[in-house]
Image (cartoon, rainbow, N blue to C red; front, side, top):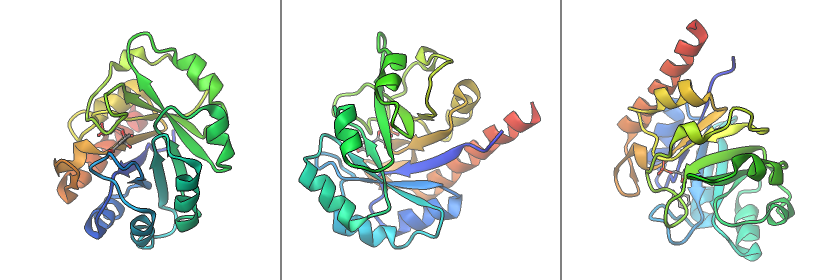
Length: 212
Ligand SMILES: O=C(O)c1ccccc1N[C@@H]1O[C@H](COP(=O)(O)O)[C@@H](O)[C@H]1O
């Protein structure tokens, strides 16, 4: 079994980047959605991304961004992985010409298998709770809604924190987990200690899986 990858999303400060890297995060997310309290400009994200060591991936999160905005962000961070978290069509995601994660807004009645088939070009399907405002809402969805046979790698997100991520990993067995609100001491403000506790809990889950 390979270890569960960790993405910490919505970083806005140098200290947050340092904390995520120190805790062992595999990826860090920059939110290019103006309505988010975690919004950063491409120039600011590029400054923060320069602090990353090799093999830690910057991820750019977009919600229905116009093509020009996407192109501007890609110019500032040419190596980032894309995360589409709005209503982007498969064609729009593919037009960007980069590896991408596609967020699914999970709730009762949502047809995840059909969604994953439509976005089969995605590197992974990111499962988030259906919330107003598209995401970053700290809301957990019912993990039993996830079918066992999703044809793509799955990133579990939505209301994760140090206290529930172990259970989530043991139940869902995702390729990766993604957290934003659950490592914040106040809206939009990351806590180094909460990031560390979250990453430790992921490692504990992996150890349990290895032992079982
Ligand atoms: O972080 C945001 O502000 C955000 C805004 C719009 C769409 C998605 C956003 N974040 C992503 O939402 C999920 C769940 O976040 P949380 O842990 O429940 O706060 C996560 O993938 C973030 O990357």
